[in-house]
Length: 133
Image (tube, rainbow, N blue to C red; front, side, top):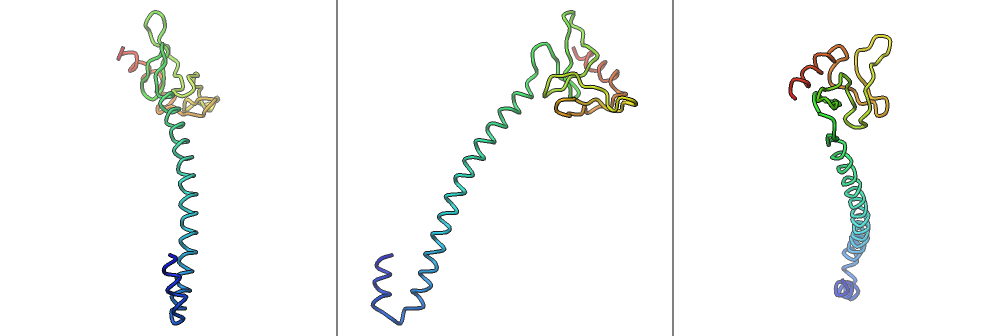
């Protein structure tokens, strides 16, 4: 932009254009700084997303000795039968009836994952999973 500055210096009638050019240059510098910041934030978010996707895929994998079904994990015994206990697909812990006095749901005490079936349907859901083996 040095040629433009030289032209504006030699022609005083171009002062309004000079002021506009200076304002544009300032705005351009601010935009470049903003773009640089956004690139840095984007890289950080991409790294965070990759880590979360890795955790999610690890959580979705069915561990050995379990079978996945109806939104929960079910432990398969040595005799090949499925236990009548639903396990959290994320934490691999037994989900407990909630609330304890009149249970309506199964909930993981660690991550608060709620089974997609009601506590009253545990027997029927277990039978359905058992029948698929």
